[in-house]
Image (cartoon, rainbow, N blue to C red; front, top):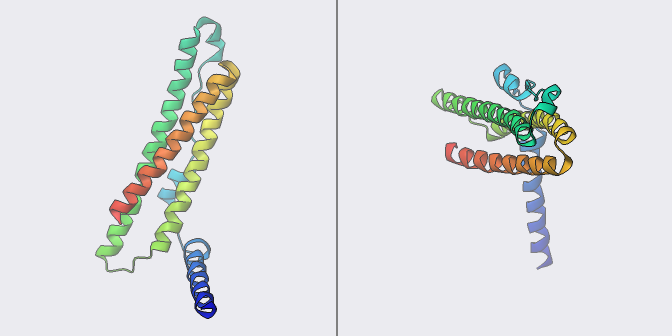
Length: 167
């Protein structure tokens, strides 16, 4: 019984090691200027004019920051959609050309792009969040940060569902 258990553990470790290598270690040529630009390009963040702060009531100030936040979210979603579209087009093209479909290649390329897009979006959000916290207050800024976290969770769930449908 111990030998069977030991053999089973060795097989599980070997399979786990293989998948770790294929999906996380193995290098793929994933250079794609269009995808890289979508993932890496810095956002143009337009913050409210704080010199007009005294002229706006608190609701107007919050609304102006919400506009900046919504612009960031809309741009991030546009970029994400374009990256997904590029992945789908590349997959279809490879399939139509009879090329081998390497899921580890797609995972490596597009997961990396998604990670970089998320980092870029986080930087843009941080710019908005810090200014919001400074001019509106920490409590409201915490609410905005939680809303952003929830939005990111929603994006991940939607992307996973879309990938499952596409492949």
